[in-house]
Length: 428
Image 1 (tube, helix red, strand yellow):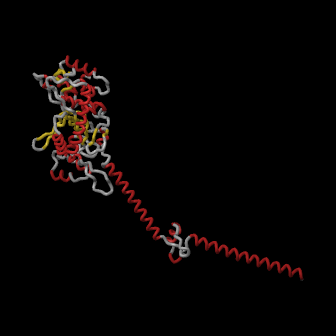
Image 2 (cartoon, one colour):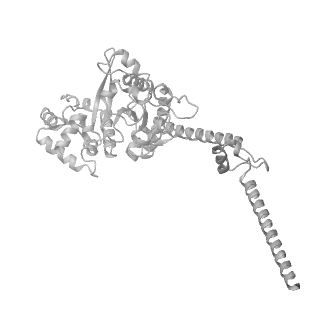
């Protein structure tokens, strides 16, 4: 337990027991064990308290000794958060945004998306021109339903335009070539169809395969900011006023999601495939973007239907929102249906053409059966009578009747002759 607390603080820099709880012990229903572990670590000089929040929670961070112990416990190559220096003013240590980032990671881990060491904060994505884009939180968990997720958390500290610009920059970074790739080979790869267009890109060497079409997905988590200081003489809000304010703030957050979606369409839009046989869309070059709010995360959890996919039609779970039901899967289904339809049309045309060429009986004009037609095709043309099976059978029956009549006439004649002979003998 104490080791996991050390690792969590090393990865997330600072947090309270409430945020650490789902990351350290996601299966427990209370955070008491985390608070006890923090108390033990404080006595051992591994963690220190930076601030007591207004609701009584304590904000913790690592000491240099605790950071060394956490480094030894974490897997090699883990990205540690920056060390927290001691400050003269405790208020400078408090960051609601930082706590929101830890809380988002906790909600994701509690829902089964990732584990403690699958997360990293303030992950740098270098861009040309000595620029960098820092992701608030990155989930990397290969082989799962969500192998990679780049998370941006905003508490009204960035405008819609800034978030749209970040999404554009994410897409720009995902289109960069991998190190050591020649320009000619990279430009040729950009014209490849399907997932092969990403073979030489930087992101495929940085993150695991997404398991879906498109670039690494980005999640926006919005929270309403709050004023830290009320005007002198302003009475505190009543419970009814707090509920009304929370509802108004959440409606504003939902409007922000729609506004950002409309303004960032150039990043997430997936064009339709150029084919008459399908209505599917090509998501391979699009940036999947999902969005939610902190109130929805707290109420329903990260595995609830709280995620809005930009360009989607309804709220969905995280895995459903990241899926592309109108992508390659629909393309394969519709192409297969189109192939079957073409095959059926061709088979119908062949049947009609065969019926047109089917010969008819020279006597009754009835069409030949398949067996009679095959017999005619395999027989010599000059030796075929051109009759259908019915007419042939009628001829056979007629000949049999005539033969029977001839036999009967012969029998009758023989009987008459025998009768005359007996009559003459008697007279003599």
